[in-house]
Image (cartoon, rainbow over all chains, first blue to last red; front, side, top):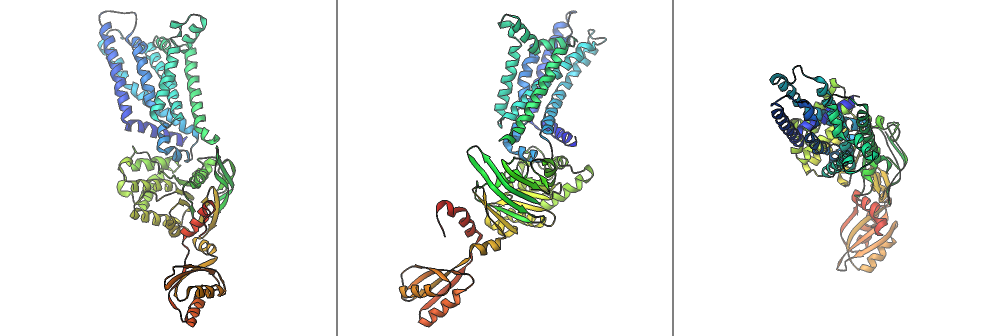
Length: 248
Length: 315
């Protein structure tokens, strides 16, 4: 456990030492901030049936950002260790492969959470400067953050898994992006195909519609199971890939 | 401390380590010598628990590397050949991180890090970013890292590679000074390094151990026959014939056909033929201007053991 905590701390520190992480964070906050201000100005004219937070989390902009963001945050994780050879000292320290993988995941997720933290200001702003959220509606708000967390977990674990496959960060980022894009497009299946199966694929895989639901404050267990099990599967695969050096 | 039995490592289409067995006792400094690609690094990686063996067993401090990997890793300090470090971290940060990872208790952290920094001569760069350090400093940071948890066994893969002569000397004396507390296995392809630091040498070639002894004894064993060089002036064929008949001489080689000729004799080491040669030359009235027995260097031994079979050359 102490090894895990040490590794996790190191991962998180490394994020804050890396320019990529700051670029990603700035990019993310600029996008979210712009959307937020646009939505607020649109809604400022009159009462609407939706809340700002709902629109914020449900907007396709959030989506596009995630597609770019997750590969950038995770591409370095294991591939850089492989490239620089530090994987050798890491794996000969008295730590298990699983601890290393979980610590890297926890590090990435923590940074992801840190990235979201400033958006809590939006709630504060709304609360103080508009009538809409007085008293604030915590359901959609928490739902939205919860959904962002779940989806973040899943996508970051995909990225981690891809970075275990290669010693090249760019390759890692590209594979991650491709996998995420496939999942994202599969979620839009019912736009291009007819039939029950297309609809089923869409409802189960479309993170876009999941996000819409979460940000309405509804908790459906199916997407929760989907993201959690997907994350677990990806982490399991990553541990196996890291262990794979033992099979040669 | 280390017991290796029938260790084999196969890669697809290539045998990197082939049925290697050896022992290293506690407190020894053992040099692992071999040409590039002989299987040194592979063996060390297996010992450190990074790679699994295809066959055979490796025990470190009584623990099997394959089944008790974590126990083994607690007891070794391993410095890989490329000396990998996290370039974005500061030296102190890095040592702290590695020490915690290797289970150094929080209370001892500061004193341990201070001690290894002092020992490795990096006390003045503690707050520098590793990526900005010179190769010599980085190598010593790597060495400090491998020492930080006071391991019983140090496995150092080419610890002096890429250093300038002063730094090499520093690292060597550091390694020698570590011998009182640690068992050390170090690999190198620099022979003088082994002669200076190691009490025992393992020579590996083509994945096999071809020799294991002290540098001195290796030299003696290698040169069961002494090589003696003599420069003599006189009738060549007569001298050649006379030298051949000396007791203990097995072979005489003649070089140069001027008045002075150089004779290279192979003779048994016990019967020191140098006196006999002198007496012979004196009694026949020839002239002698050089006579010496060549000491085999470790380099000769190395070349002999690792090259002769492949290239068909015998020196």
